[in-house]
Amino acid sequence: MFVKTAKETLAIQTKQVMPNDTNALDTLFGGSLLAWMDEVASISAYRHCGRVVVTASINNVSFDQPILAGDYVTLEAKVSRAFTTSMEIFVEVFVEDSMGKRKKSNEAIFIFVAIDQHRNPISIPELIPETEEEKRRYASALQRRQLSLVLAGRLDPKEASELESIFYKDKK
Ligand SMILES: CC(C)(COP(=O)(O)OP(=O)(O)OC[C@H]1O[C@@H](n2cnc3c(N)ncnc32)[C@H](O)[C@@H]1OP(=O)(O)O)[C@@H](O)C(=O)NCCC(=O)NCCS
Image (tube, rainbow, N blue to C red; front, side):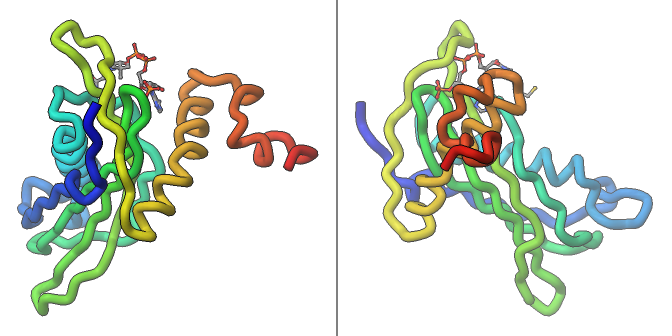
C-alpha cells in the first residue's frame, strides 16, 4: 500500500466568529469550535486515506482563551500517525484580531477511522513524518493511542505497554 507524508495531509480553514456561533458572554461557543475542529480534522484524515472517515475519539481538547465575536479563526489539521485503520490528527486553532495579530488559542487531538461501504474499518496508508515536530508527534502517538483506548475501556491497562511507567510506578 502506498504511503503519504504528513505534509500531504495538511488541511486549513479560516472562519469568522458570527453571532450564531457565540454564547451568552459573546464569545465563541465551545461546541461550535469543536464542530469546526472535527470538520477540518476529517478533511485531513480524508487527505491521508482517500476513504470515508468517522470520528472515533476526541482527546486533549484545550480551550486556553476566549475567542471573541468578529475574530478570524484559522484551524490547521495534520495527521500525526496512521495505525492499521485509525489515524491521529492534531488540530491547532489560531486567532487573528482586528490588528492582524495571530496567536494560538486551542488544540485537540482526534482519532479518525477509515471505513468501507459496509461501515467496517479498512486499512489505510502508512504516514511518513518529515519535520522534527512531525517526528516528535509520530513517536509519542503510540502512548496517546494506548491512553485513549484505556480511557475508552477498549484496552486493559495491564496490556498498555507504553503506559506502564504511568500506571505501575515500579516499572520503568
Ligand atoms: C469508529 C468505529 C468505526 C470503530 O469500529 P470498531 O468496530 O470498534 O472497530 P475496531 O475495534 O477495529 O477499531 C477500529 C480502529 O479504531 C481504533 N479506535 C477505536 N476507538 C478508539 C479510541 N477511543 N481511541 C483510539 N483509537 C480507537 C482502534 O484501535 C482501531 O485502530 P487500528 O485499526 O488502527 O488498530 C465505530 O465505533 C463507529 O462507527 N463509531 C461511530 C463513529 C461516528 O459515527 N462518529 C461520528 C460522531 S457520532
